[in-house]
Length: 159
Image (tube, rainbow, N blue to C red; front, side):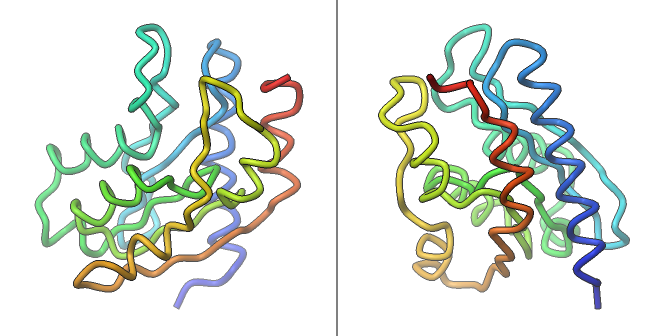
C-alpha cells in the first residue's frame, strides 16, 4: 500500500511539468503516468499552444499517448497524477484507457474559482468522481491534495 508521501511526491512531479508548461508559454497544467512500481513512465504538459487546441489538456493527451504505447492489462495497474482534477473530457479519457487511479491537486471547483470565465479555460465544475461513477468499472480517485501548491501554479495566469 502506498503512503500519502508517495502520492505527494508524484503529484509534485505533475506540478513540475505544469510549471514547465507555463514557462513554455502555455497553460499551467501537467500530468504524469505512473507505473505499478511507482516509476514515472510519461509526462505531458498542456498542449493548448501553439495551435490553440481546446482539447489539448495534459491529461487527455497523456491518456492518448499511454493507450498507444501500453497494453490495457498494463494500464489497469497504472495511475495518473495531475496538477488539477481532470475535467469531464479528461476523466472520460482516463476511464476509456482503463487506468486504476487518478491523483490530483486542485479540484475543478477550486480551479473554476481561479480561472473565472476565461475564454481559454471555461472550467466545468463537474467532479471526475461523478464521471467515473457513471462507468462500469471502478477508478480510485485521490484529491484534492497539496492545494496551495497547485493554486500557486496559476497565480496571475488568468487575470
